[in-house]
Length: 193
Image (tube, rainbow, N blue to C red; front, top):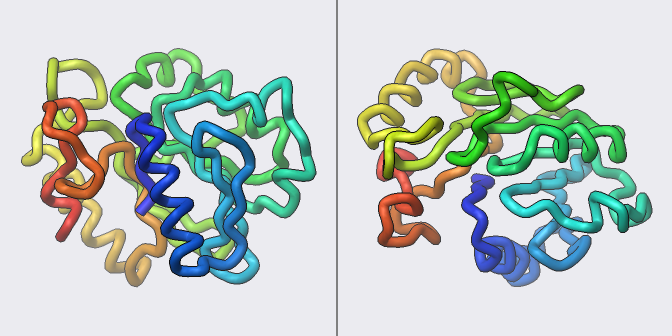
């Protein structure tokens, strides 16, 4: 499960998890929690979320991202930033929407694929995208627990036809997994099912 939510500690914990369990191919590409992690032999994934990092802007060093085969955005990044990342790294970029992604309908990122509440196959992986966060003020891309449960249940048949998924991409976390007590940062209980 790849999640966004803008809190740097989540990425540090992902990095610590990779070192602790010896995930092959994980390497840090800069501060602010930008990590390249190899999910399985032969597939190197760049996961980005919430924070636009210098290493993917003016301070871009192609050596840091050599061999990246898939880019996944977990939300809350400007569409122009995703276009820039896609131009700098020659790999397919899939994204889901976070609770602050309000301009994507008017100005979608160029060369990128929206995976909101959808399934895709890329690089031999089955990807499932779940956009948005828990409802907290009625804004776009905010959902009640029952709404998220309904979205996921509508995907059951597609998931079954794909014989499951390899990676779930979400902006929100599962409840009680790196979430917080405030309404905006609570995770979804149904993600555990």
